[in-house]
Length: 358
Image 1 (cartoon, rainbow, N blue to C red):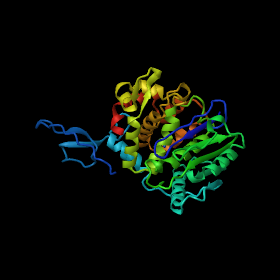
Image 2 (image 1 turned 90 degrees about the vertical axis):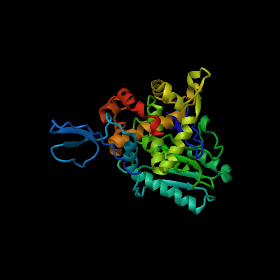
Image 3 (image 1 turned 60 degrees about the vertical axis):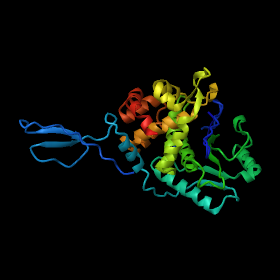
Image 4 (image 1 turned 180 degrees about the vertical axis):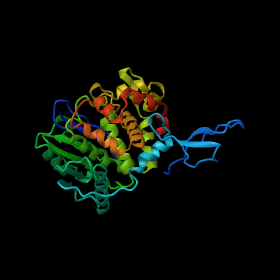
């Protein structure tokens, strides 16, 4: 199956492939308020549920800490827990990477590129397979040269959906005839361009997905494929403020809901019809094959879902979930086996908190 995932630097843009080919498309902890029970004089001891670990006077109240869980979601703490996994980012030198770098890219931007690659590879160090990949970075100024290289990456047999590189607002992760490569335009203002820091880790997350035998299976949902890549892109490459701004942008984007000529934003869908939105985002194609193109909803909702999963279960558990696709293509069963909750139950638990996660 061919898949091509494209993420713009300022406004994400995705080109999805034809389904028959081989190319394939991511604070301080807040204290929980203590809940006190009025203690009558006749009561010697009362148990109170709180997040605090400091005991109150003996024989009056005993404090029990209730940890964050899927049944005890406290948004501020979940958000902080998730980001803690990416605060102290280290570096990992990755072998077997072939670099094609446009000579027009500045030294400063080259430093930013390699920093982002190394930080991302460190996050995926326990799952990344040391296989040949090609990372191709080009500039708008050399688009003619870039198109020639792009064609060469496809062995001169470039698929119809990816015939040309058009502008500097897109990036893509690709798998074609057993080769994996990232193609990305680097603008002069790469460091400051809206959302650009998320692009490289997002595309490398797709490369890691490709390395799992069944991850890009045709029945995989948009919110997992695109949402997890968007989560890692945000949390590795953007500050918390940058992530919030990007999500706000996606939340406002409107799409044609079920081809009924009713334009609706993802935020409106989250408020009015969350279950319909979730089912919509279980479509592998993100709406491209039925002319809807709600991929930005997949970016937003999927990123929030994975923030929940990392914040509650830990990043190691999410990496474990990734690994299950080396064994099975049954994503719902993989999800339940990893997180001990069904997908539908997960939807129900997180729905009340979605808007507060933007």
